[in-house]
Amino acid sequence: MHYLNKDIGKYGEDLAETYLKNLGYEILDKNFSCKFGEIDLIGKDKEYTCFIEVKTRYGTFYGYPCEAVTKNKQFKIYKVAQLYILKKKLFNENFRFDVMEILLNNNEKNPSIRLIKNAFYI
Image (cartoon, rainbow, N blue to C red):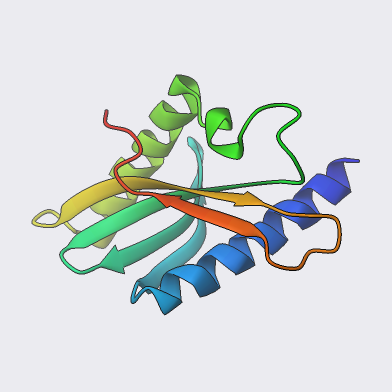
C-alpha cells in the first residue's frame, strides 16, 4: 500500500507541475528536502516565490486532500522553506505557501485540481 501511495503522490505532483506551468508559474525546484522535511514544488508566480504542498487522493472518505496539511505539516514546510531561502540567498523575495489539492477519479481522466494560494501563514 505504501508504494501505491508514493505512486499516487508522484502522479499528483506531475499533474500539479503541468497545471502550474499552464498558469504561468516557473518551477524552480521539485522535492526539495532536508532534515526538517520536504517541499513538493517551489515555483515563481509573478513577484512571489511559492512553496507548494501537493496532496492527491482518490476520494474524500478521509476528508479533502488539503485537510491533510495540518499545523504540524505547515510548520515543517515553513522550516524547509527557511533553509531553502538561506541556501538560495533569496533574502529580498516575497514568499507564499500554497496547497494543491488533486482529486482523482477511478479512470484518472479529468481530475479535480484546486490551487489554494496563501493557504497558510506562519
